[in-house]
Amino acid sequence: MRFYPPLFFQRIWVQKFGKGFTSVEVKVSKSIFNKNYNDSIFGGTIFAAADPFYALLFDQVLQRRGFKVRVWLKSAQIQYIKPGRTNLYFKINITKEDIAEAEHILNTVGKYVKAFPVEMYDKTGQHCVSLINEVYVRNLYDGENRTIAY
Image 1 (cartoon, rainbow, N blue to C red):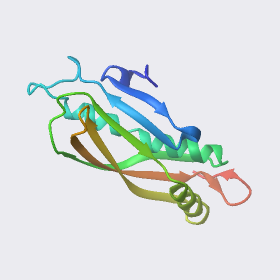
Image 2: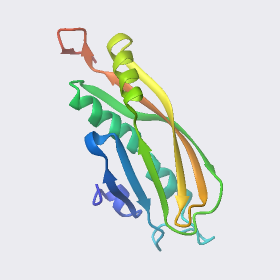
Image 3: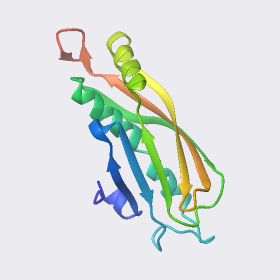
Image 4: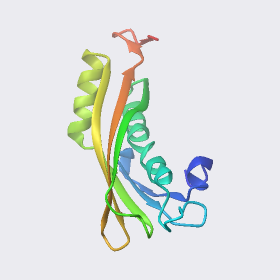
């Protein structure tokens, strides 16, 4: 994903995916391409860094468990606590409980919507950004016969 253009040109680097796509570690590198006139990382870059990862993790985890799903970020809220004057870092984890809850709801209701936090820190460990990402997951299989429902 390092060379995916929307991330690459904003200097958003996936450092590591956890085993089975249950976590991801991300670095937002400050550069001439993403700093604002206050010499901090542009808020749009910070927001873009957090946007895809919960959806990507749920998509990968659920596909590996036999689901055919459509996943996207339904909504988000962001709070800039301190300017990102250095590189920013964050880690996202999906727990076994989150996965079990999603599977149960997808098998019974058909769609799963839940909000998850993202916290970003600078290189000194200062808390700079808090986000809430609401993930939407829709089960495309209809019933036990595994036909796709649109």
